[in-house]
Image (cartoon, rainbow, N blue to C red; front, side):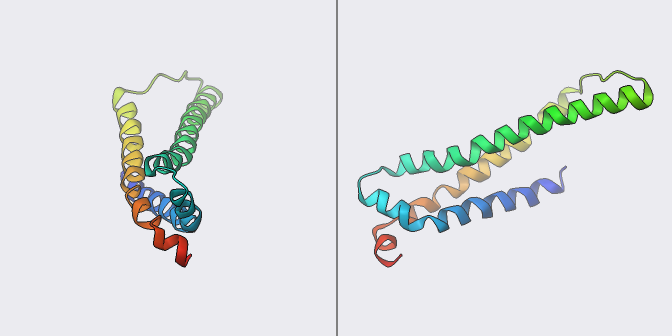
Length: 120
């Protein structure tokens, strides 16, 4: 998990930056019409964070379900709740992911200036 986290983080940053780059002109036009930069930041954050958290919750639930089914069917054991370190690692991974998303938001100011609307 520790080896895959930096790779996933880089992929997430590239995805968010690519999405911003693809919508440079529409975002610039919105800024020219009076939409505040913080509103655009909220839009980008919501469209990135909501799917990230939803997928994390589904993946966590499916992992517990599969582990429970396997232990019950193959070994006859019941699934015990994981230690607190497991939850800390999951929370830490999500915090790093949210930090990566937040680190890409300053690009929005540079990409949505008036020159982007003219030269798009």
